Image 1 (cartoon, rainbow, N blue to C red):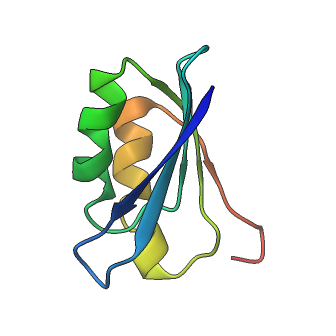
Image 2: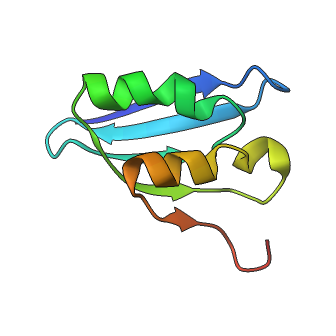
Length: 84
């Protein structure tokens, strides 16, 4: 079963999404605004989820600031369109 959770960044109220598969325990983050790492890490570790990728919808700072931190913390690749 897939589960979608929404987290709201304290900076500019930007949404961050966590899509998790309860069967495989794999997860994907969509957008990583400021504060996303602190908001999502407890969910990932508490549910024993493996972060498989970080998808950035575009390159604006309010959607990307925590992507490097999440990449380092969970060793997950970051995907963004090459034009960004």
